[in-house]
Length: 285
View 1 (cartoon, rainbow, N blue to C red):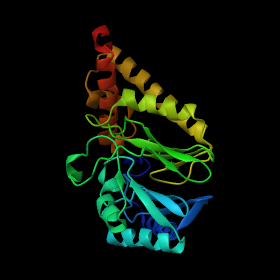
View 2 (cartoon, one colour; view 1 turned 180 degrees about the vertical axis):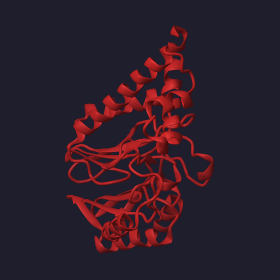
View 3 (tube, rainbow, N blue to C red; view 1 turned 90 degrees about the vertical axis):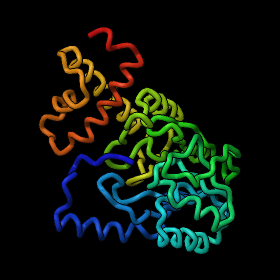
């Protein structure tokens, strides 16, 4: 799940028509790279953008990443894509247990009779999600696809790294548009920053996010995310020094000109405050 601060109050009629046309185009099977295809789930919203990206990776045996919500039309589209590609699924992988990524996974895995892989414990709304830690790699041409634990957005968040084409399937680590929402207690800002640094160290050629378009300038985008979070942390520290001690009060100062974003901003600030509490900064004020 990520945030779009551009317009949280709704779309104009014209913008809505443009987005509707875009969604029709993007819901078709799209090849983003050799042996990588994308389908966009029909769950557009201010929090999911055009919808959740489902990826089919490899061939003739493919790994399906993030089947998305429990939507029958999307499940049928995934099955039809396998038929179109003359491919066979070898596993379903969810990058994390938020329902916009994982809700449809148990049904799809059962339908295809393949393992369902995830890390960590399922959230309450996903009790049916089976936690399978092995295999952590998949042998795909031209190289191995590897599951990497990248907590922060959620404790069980993972990315998948395809080493030879240097492609990173990022889930909600980053987004093609907007920024990613980190909400305590499941969201952990310190872990999130560490995960960003770890993925930056891989120097990916491109990032395929859980929402939005492919990110071609991948290292620059990861560095931008890091810089943005660290800059925000400095703003929070400065306001703490001025006597603002609650997430709501700090967010109101930082986003004084963005009242429509205040509710989401408060959640983000709380994640920063939780990180600073754990690091012992509050004793300095």
